[in-house]
Length: 325
Image 1 (tube, one colour):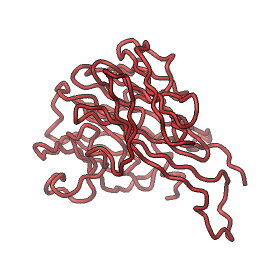
Image 2 (tube, rainbow, N blue to C red; image 1 turned 180 degrees about the horizontal axis):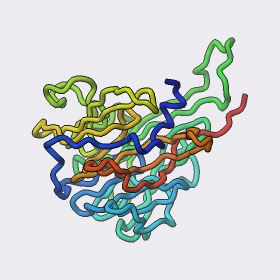
Image 3 (cartoon, rainbow, N blue to C red; image 1 turned 60 degrees about the horizontal axis):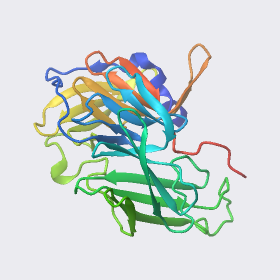
Image 4 (tube, rainbow, N blue to C red; image 1 turned 45 degrees about the vertical axis):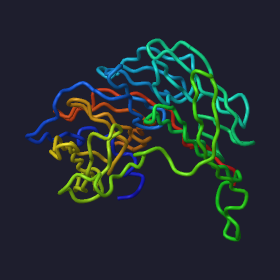
């Protein structure tokens, strides 16, 4: 099956049916803190069990009701939700200039502004939450130590399209930096330090003692670390190859659900009998001849029936426009 079909098959929703195994997911409210499902998608914890905060497809911060996908509020703030700390929603905002990090502080219940924190980054680093043709800025927040730290990476390269055959130095002009911004809320300051590494448990795959015993193949952690996903390829009349997801509870190692999806893995979170996951942008030509295209989405899927209950479009941080030759 070609890559085009692999990337576009979720539109055939009829084939993506869940198959619940006898041991079903138990309905329980979250007891931990909020979880970052994917960049710009923050799912509430014990304080906000039915809420998620996203950057929508135009970059505005929005609060979503996890029960039905309804929008509780939207904007006017723009940026990527990073963390929920001491009743404040921390958002990576649009900087006024390069060499600056802007963190917006919002009321998570209303979206109203409660402050802004500015910090200095190395010269030329554009800490933008939006897709750029020749640069990428990524930020991951970690509050596990009681102090909010924003781990960031920045990559920049010459703006051009195809790689020329006679180009002997394809990485010439490339720039890569990383660091940590520590947030001091009482002092209302950001402190920059250079470091390697990343916050604990950000790797998608589970290794060593983290793995669920007796489950073969690569295992992927859920956003809150509670569940593990193992996928196996299955033949499909429409897709050629689909993937059977098997979800395991890591604490007990029990299998809680199975469902068939077009991708071998994706960022995900399990709440009660629902699966929340990030679906990549897709495009396909349907049997009717019509062309169907969907952007990056947060999808809610019922693990009992397999039905997609709702979805919302998200900000795509990958540049997909035209590049120079």
